[in-house]
Amino acid sequence: RMLVEQMPVVTYVITNADNDSSLYWSPQIEALVGYAPSEFVANPRLWRQLIHPDDRDRVMVEHYRTNATGDPFRIEYRLVAREGRVVWVRDEAVLIPDGSATAFNVFPENSRSSRRVGPREALPVVIAPL
Image 1 (tube, one colour):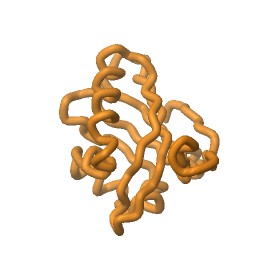
Image 2: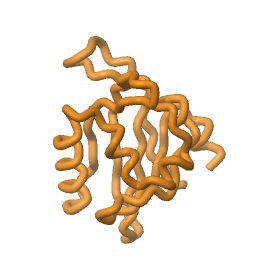
Image 3: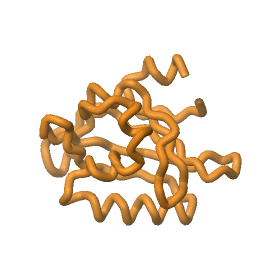
Image 4: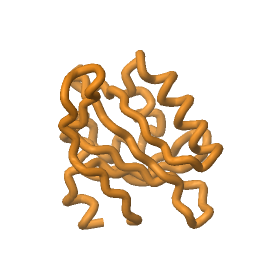
């Protein structure tokens, strides 16, 4: 956990259930979108609510498809931060291979889509078990 919380990425673990209950969000999420990790854990719908309205349907279709198939989840989209700022992220997730219904997800901070807003300024993505 200490390693994950020192990395320049946001790490989160959610259940692979219809309610997408959050089990863990790393502290970096607060700097990215202005919400504390505890707010994501307390409100399972917060992640979905923060997805930009123009991206939400596309992201959720891919989220449910990859949960059903076990394929890696890799997608770029926008989040709307607490103060209204729009943040581009690249979200990459894999199902935890122990057979549980939990997804382990990582997305880099400061990731921007090259096709929409200019050159990519992404940090490396690291996926590792907690």
